[in-house]
Length: 599
Image (tube, rainbow, N blue to C red; front, side):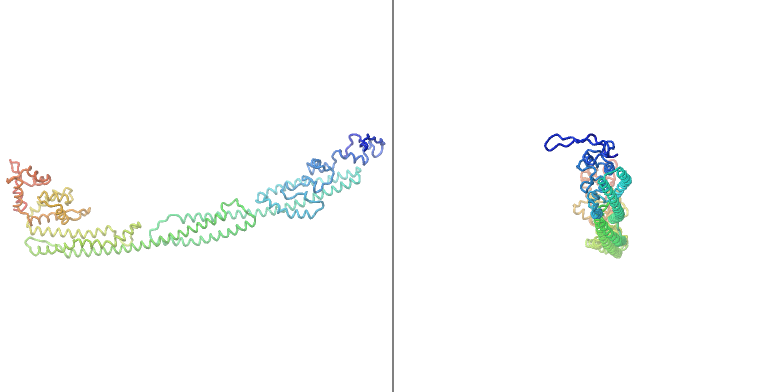
């Protein structure tokens, strides 16, 4: 029933002479080839085979190959022809390339070639690897999913084989010719063989995928392990570099020794982590041998880790070198501090010895006018004190400060202001040395004043008068006369000295003020100087003669006459000291001269 019916009677072929063909004689209507029986002779079937409809076998083949009829017609191969290795369509052979490109192609399997199948199976893995398709776990898993889909399709196609056998039996039962029976049996056999071969290759392909999956899982585990160890090493190296580059302040030898010992102890950590990095490098080599060329889990490669480790080692070596330099500096500064303490103690010992020498040279003494021995003793003290305040002695005192000053300069340059070995500073030492000069000057002024009083024989009233004069010219009220104030006092009292003489007098009787260190003359120095002047050359007659000159020979002098020859400040002082004669607006200078010289 599957054999197609003829659409029209067959036409005879033309003769070689070109004459119209003679139609064949009509056949009997009954018998095997009669139209009633629905069957034709073998020759008729052969002639009509070119335009017949697809047979059942073609339809079945089309189920294995959705485009078999189209491919067959396009290639000129008869639909019922036995496919060969060259003519077999890819879809009929279930090309494994759809699941693994370049892996399996049944068109390469020749008829009854077990050797070709074996060779193909052996080269399957190499072909897959050569194309780089299975280079990740996800790629292998994708291939496994594709295989599952193929297996389902394959099982469905294989389940139709019993139906094919049933159809062949039906065809045979319907009276299929013997030569067709052989062709159908041979074709059915090859189809089944192809199914078996595909099943074998599928099983081998699945085995390869599972092996590859196991390998990729191991490779993935190696990637994760490498990434974890690389991350740990990187965190250690970053933390170490931060620690080794942070700023630390060291102010003593003990602190420097502690920091250096910690840096040296850190050598063990560096060595341990360097060993771990070497082990990671060996592990990375194993990964390369396994075929792991990329690692998406790790931010670092061995090259970057090695560079960072080298940088960490360089930073560590630099920190140790820096700490060793700091330790050496602290030791040198500590030696300077000890030396300064010793130098400071030497200066203080010298100051104590000098004070004792001053006390020996000029002990406390009271000089009286009627005591010739005390006056002589006072003069001896003055000679000794003059030697103690000479320029040579001052230079000697300054030289005692030089060793301590040099050490102090080095410590200040290094910003080392704390010294655990002494409480003395350079300013304190200078103050102690300056105190020697002050003590000598005070003793000189004190003894000079006593000698002047004893030799000048002034009265207490005269001393009070000089004190009043001193206080008047002390404009700042600090109980001292600076150089300008002393100069004004001299001119007010009629002492006309040159600039050089004024400076010499001021330097001789001046001393440093305790609060500011400025040179100034105290009341004792002021009294000493003027009493010495009174004793040496001033007399009451000379003072009266000076006033007569200002008053043009009169016994009285006016304020205008004083202003004509004297500065205003001096005039004001004299007006306050001279007695005003009533009714004449003039000043009496004789009582003032007698008062000054105690007459």
